[in-house]
Length: 453
Image 1: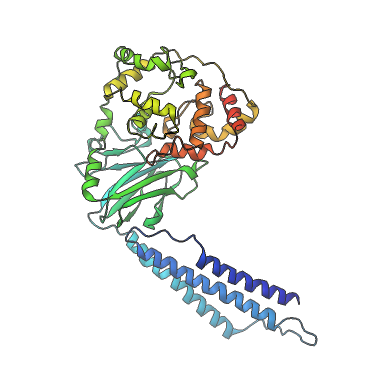
Image 2: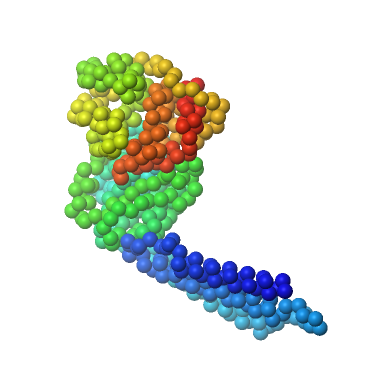
């Protein structure tokens, strides 16, 4: 009786598995590249493994029913059956060949990059993507981690003339022309990552110390998400980027708008004296000493890194911040950011802010410091153990900043009032991470701990 019950359970398992596969809403994304042979290979694998799954379980059910225990019957011991072994080995060989052969042909195409394919470098690091195109000379400049800095995040060799015209895409959004082959060179500056666009069907690991690659031909105009499919740390799930596939004219216009390495190194030096006059508009809310004003929703500025101020002003001017109707403080700040009309004005204000006294603001939030220390461990991997901020993880300083403002921003991120813009990838990352602080008390506990740093 037990054997019959087990046989019925196996039949239910097999039928349920087949129904789940064929009726499941989770299917392959619509293909958007020329790699249809990858889909063919996947289909072959499903059919072969599916056939084996059904056949093996059907045989098991047959044995359970036919050879179930019955009084007066005795099993024969038959340790050697050459005919059966030949049949099973032959069927297994055919199945393995059927699964491997299409993949070998696909791999042969995968490693053979077509001549004339457009080169683009995708650089991965915890937890960020950035991109680089060769300039007019058609050559990439040399790179090395030792050259990397806040002003040279790609690590380009400043002494290499080939790199001066390299086109740098600082934001994690890259554009590609439709119906043109793309040869993507992959580089990691820290740990293993993986560059995957599900709709393109190809993926490849980024291995520190070497250059890997993949190629594809995008055939459908649209915006696609880039994923890291190699676990690279606690922020792995938020390591996102986007590929915009568009017509050639639109791509050319976008590429022309991106800075070269030489452009990024020619940023005007800030003049603190000139910046003091321009800062007068900022001082009305943020205070003459950059100390902040909670009544005006203006956070402390003194002590913030210049790279972060520069990026946030750019986000306001590009419409990434202050676009949500629910973000009232952001909407107030957006027109003020536009008063910094030129790069020189912005650099002057940053230079002035760097001269302001960095005094700790008044504490406005209390909580469980010990519990906050535990929760802060996730924050520390980007913002630093001491809350000092890290340019290489795009994480601003937290220690010594306005605790009420940090708490408000976490709420805004959780509510998608901030980070909801389609091109605000860093804001989107923070929105995902902020959900780990489930309750308001958890936020207060983290703020209480940050106030001790």
